[in-house]
Length: 318
Image 1 (spheres, rainbow, N blue to C red):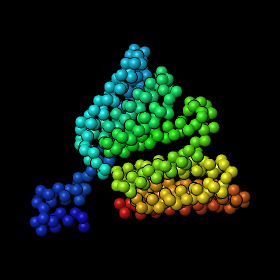
Image 2: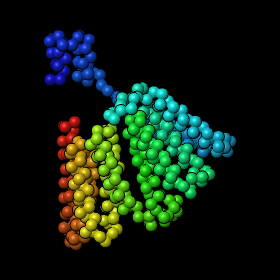
Image 3: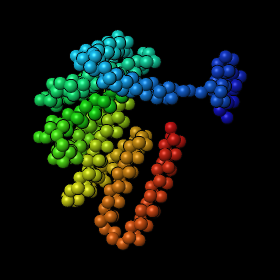
Image 4: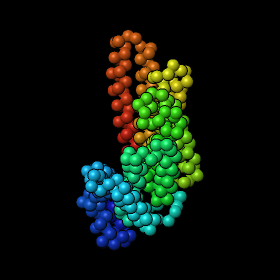
């Protein structure tokens, strides 16, 4: 029925013949969009460019010197942000439209170059070792401001990653570069607290109508941190009475948010971690090999069927 609509609109004199021709091309598939494909290629190009600059610095370090390379990378970072300030859209609490097709990629490149400069300075000179947590926190705060000023979810993801680094470094008595950091830092409990904090922050901003399209990014990181931390604690800690309800409450809350926000990704996280939690607990109860293998076979098939069915349901809603 869709290809007939342009003709009906033209017959009712609601659109011109030129508009009818264009709409007919779109409806019949002769004209189609490559928007997401081009965005993927451009984002990949930004990542490759950043990696190429890093490799170039590595190859020519003996000729150029560390200071010159740092100055070049810093200059490129400043140029990117100056361009963003000059061309950026007005400050708004809702989704902003990029002023140019390449605006988002320039902002992302500036953020990545900034992180590269910080990492390069630390690796070559170690100037940040004694106050790494403050440098990481400063980077996170700056990138949060950039993400909200220029309405960029990619920079927001980098900012949250920097905040995660600060959280793990600042609250640990062990240096991040020491070999036993992962063993003594207790990262799983800190991941639970940070994940819960990010979820609360994202939902509060969503409730106030501030950049609601950022909410999924917040909940994406929050769910992975919270559920991963709780699951690691479940299999490594003896306090099952605490972590089992925590896992199921987290999965249930995430399921509710997934349905409310129409996010299949969040629903997928909830289903995977709920299934893993149930499987771990049954592995401690089921000692009969036949029952155990039957459960694995039946549950895996049911899980795949469940995910495919819900995926189709989300597509129909979209």
